Image 1 (cartoon, rainbow, N blue to C red):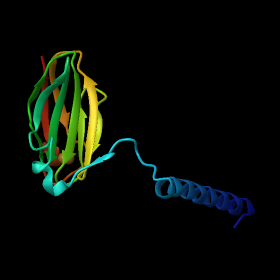
Image 2: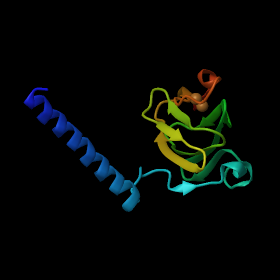
Image 3: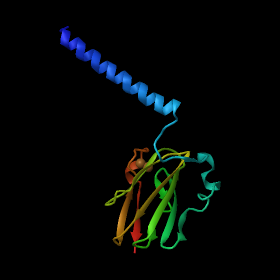
Length: 153
Ligand code: CUA
């Protein structure tokens, strides 16, 4: 092997090892992770655990709404929800079975919803209309059918 090849190979391997050590140290020694997913839930008891025992849309303040939603193969519960335009809407979500995605087309709302974790994402819909909600994490045979709509009035 050419000497330069050896040097560059060695350098790239070294950089990889350094990155793995840094990321591993942050993840395991410092307990660092993504900022979301701080709240956990027993995925076997989603239906009995508040607020998921009553999924739906509720008013939580002046022009503020919370949408409590359960994701499971292959749907969103509740589906076809309605919220007012201009209101601050917080989606509180969890998954019952596998990892699902929550993406609202035409907005920057995009979240990964994992069993055992509570995911929250807040959005204000300025424009009334019908928005498509899609699961964008492959979750099984019916993944491509997992969608619903949110109506903003
Ligand atoms: Cu749920 Cu893909």
